[in-house]
Image (cartoon, rainbow, N blue to C red; front, top):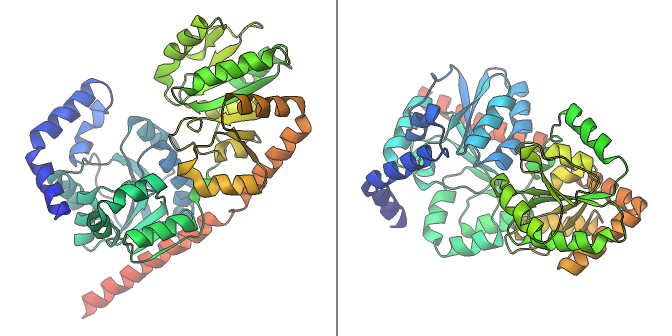
Length: 431
């Protein structure tokens, strides 16, 4: 019933969907040059041979697919891979980093006419959905065409689990479309099964295989030269409410750590000027990277409000506070920081990374703080004790390497499902 209502709503709402998409395009939130892809119109022909379609919501999910893409292309010589995402940022990233025999298209908006146009053109042999973005028309229409599907790196947060329980029949209908659901953790597997998945297991988390973030070496050398031996710490992917806490922590620490620099990388770079003004109003000296403002000896706060430079700042600071965790929003993925040898601090709100945060505590590679005072104490301890900082970073490296085989294990599952359906297709054709 809910699926029928959803499908009916996407048909009746066609004028509103078109208006909404046009508005997003006018605001620069859609790619004007490739806008037709959002309507299911493809910009290139379907390649010959086996085609795997992978869908990831945005940047983080698409990055986690890259090692798996490399592995599958290496193992299956006659295969090509179509990657879909929904954001302009992820499209640019995929355009820059996808290997030969892999290519990007925008995911069509989940309206039946767009979905059918997309599937009529691409006719994938296997579809892989990453993490937790479930589009009902895309999933059910793909399944109805007898195209096998897998959920990989599936993640069902406690909040999402609670929400889906209120729409149990719909999520069960969607999950039953997947031949296999691979969860990020045993907890995700349990939730997927309780919500209706017919087969689910955990072989690891693909995010552990994402390579270290890139850096422009000249930029790193320039900043290292400017900062010299200044004590510093990084607050990464901060959200509203956290920057004011970080500013107060800076005040608490600078009397003990002369010349302290606090680097803030907001999760949404467009907030950079707003954050800077709020901190300047509090009497702090602030420089904004996107405006090329000078990073002087007296700068208190450096706002790194640029895109694609997180790898630079993880390399610049040994101590990292991961944002979205002092506010009740679920936390941020710390693995990129661990991969670049950082000691990690995070707040109590890590609901989106529950298993990971428990393992980090067990392996002593992260410190959990509750508020401003405990954040100041944790940062102070690590600034005072470089040995403790290095030990935590080493433990973080070990944590990342604990799932070194995840790409091979997931690739094996993908190849098994693909082989099973190819064998069935040959059998059906011979019958």
